[in-house]
Length: 206
Image (cartoon, rainbow, N blue to C red; front, side, top):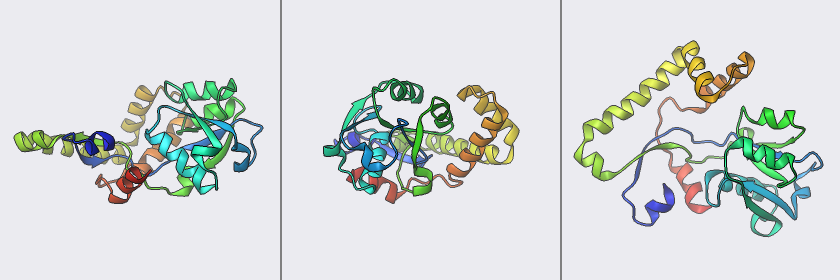
């Protein structure tokens, strides 16, 4: 929502779902250290999106200049499309979210960095609406937020129900993978889903 908001759109984030990066920096097997990424191709969904910002942040932390040292290639589709592009040598590095990174490892690709350990703040996915709707129908907005907060409570208190939903919508059938995904979700989703100022600061300055 940042770009359209800065351009004057009537948008406000009223709940923050994810405020930390948890992606893995996946690379081709011949890449061993960050400096090996010079003159290589970085795969992203689209320029300016969260994964694009996240990858640029990591590259800068590693002493690389994202705009000069790499070429950014837009790869339409989700994680599976970027895993295929890495495997086919169409790109050399990309961000893959768990649990999909395990598929990349199974395909012979390598984890060069774990953003979950880097603790980089980012205001990522959230609930966005307009000030107009908040003024016209405050009760509707309030009930939607309350429903989401109730969903967090149910997710944390009823693991079986939460895992059933994860298995259905993320197409996960393996029990170990399902449990790992649930534990990550439980750790990732804030109990009080406030959007964060530091997360938006990262968005606006990168």
